[in-house]
Length: 308
Image (cartoon, rainbow, N blue to C red):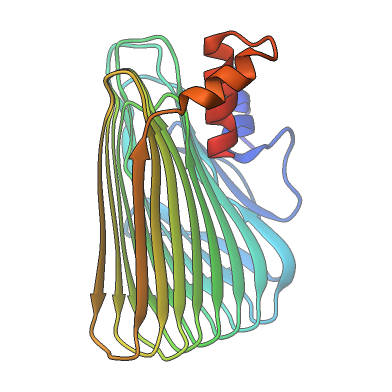
């Protein structure tokens, strides 16, 4: 076990709620080095031999277990790309917690690009939590570019919670998924940008099997002079159902481009999209201010509730 400093411990708390070593399987990574690893009889973790990253293998029938694989960077100037593959057997029910935290107090940019691939077996259920966080008062940027690929077998379910609400200067988030018969994908994204930050978030979900479904909801807030582009696409290739929703609050001089799209290649595909961008309603502010809050405090209350 590599000894971690207080900054690294704080980052692990922010992105994975880790106040101590987790129960179950885990792989902790700090400043491009292994900081700790534990396997279980049902969950194995092995380092890749051809590139940076790990293979996580979950045995069929594994239930009520968890895997934590968070990454932290606390040194300025680190740039890394990590490839993590998850092989989930049939009939599993597992929690997977990932994410990355960057604290940059230097002048050089720090960047983590994580490519995660999930191969989910028949009738398995996965909950995946990925949080991104940035801090530090240096001039160097905090850059995170996650790529998530999901391949779902018959009857499987995946629930994804994707969160980025502080301190990341630049991010390009890409998520693609392919679903077979009766597979179900649920995505809840929360995103906030401020200052000069930029964020792109793109989803491409292919519903290939009869009975497959996807529900993708993105909530975002763009503050100050930040910019966001949200691109949500569902492709229906069978008797399936899909729903996308972009719901955004724009503030100050922020800019948001929402591009929801649907593609139906079957007469049995039922696809719906919604998109809304607007400012905080004045009556909401007034109501909270009559309760004794300042305008700034009222705005924070509304934003926190919106992104909850």
